[in-house]
Amino acid sequence: MKTIRRLIHGEIIRAVTFVAIGFLALFMFFDLVDQLQSLSKNKFQGYQIQHALMYVGLLIPSHLYELLPISVLIGSIFVMARFAQSSEFTILRTGGLGPWRALGTLFQLGLLFVTITFIFGDYISPWSDRQAQLLKAHYQGQITVGQTGAWLREKQENSQFALNVKSMDSNGNPENIRINEFDNQGRLLAITTSKHGEFTNTGLWQLKEVNRRIFNIQTAGASSIQVLNLSEWQWKTNITGEMVGAALLSPDRMKAIDLFQYMRHLEANGQNAQRYEIEFWRKVFYPLSCWVMLTLALPFAYLHFRSGNIAGYVFGGVMAGISFYLLNNVFGFMGNLQNWQPLLTAAAPALIYSLVSLATFAWLVLRQ
Image 1 (cartoon, one colour):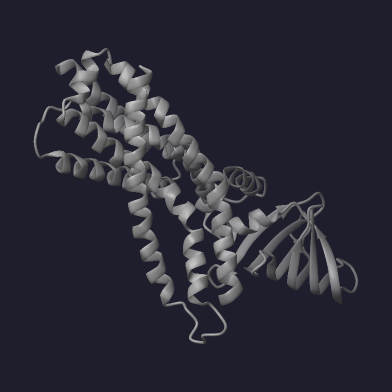
Image 2 (cartoon, rainbow, N blue to C red):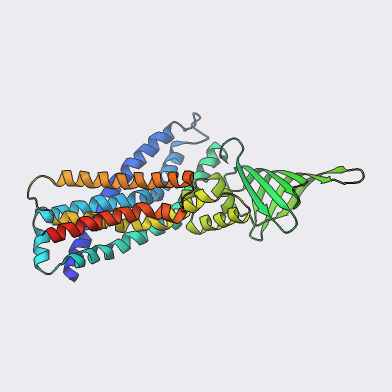
């Protein structure tokens, strides 16, 4: 069995690597063409071709994370179909490779692909995406979203805050900050604006060029507004830089733990976290799709053909992989719109395709 595993694993790894490199080259070309229109007209300053190349290079881990499951599907289908065409798989079956052993062999290999996908999706890709955004912001301007920026809420013991961050600078620090402070009865206590801020590791924001308007509202007597112009001011909060980044950047580029913390923060402050819950569970289940793809590929080894038709079967496998991605995205959007259970919304596509592939595999085995 060690020899058989080495044969199957080696062939699939080589095929998957070849497919992944081909896809990455294609996506890098598209990214580079897209970045060419953003190059600065001044040859000595601004966003230049070398910066575009660095930006495209930093997007590689993200593309690999997205493309690895479908690369696993195409590569494994090609190997399984070729084994069937050359009757190698028939010889392996004669040598004792039963259906469940074959499935177990692919599952062992699937663990490697699941681990690689998890590492890229939860560690390498978020870091490289952030560096790519900061690189582009350094030469082109700020990181923003929409016209109003990001809005977050926080409840503290004696007050509530509505925070608006319009942009982030090239170092990942917030800019154009507005903090509205209310009491527990919803009355406005203060409005604080700042041009620039810095995140600290002690639960404090260090704000600079601060304007504070403190409202002293009296039920009986004169009310007043106190205006303070400060060079620096510290704000104690549990809102972290990752949370601001989650609101300003795409949630699918975040670490699972950061998504979880941001999701819990939204729930604790009475905000809708449906979108981020779905994205969190998709982040959890996405690496497992490599197992689903290997399960989809195994039935191709039990087909009988001797000439031609590998390209047709590989094309069918590609279409199956594309349909999996479409279903995955459709379920995400529909779950968000229809308020479906996030766990089931994220897990449903993988469960459906796993059941279909296992049913196909069982039918082919029983038929023969």
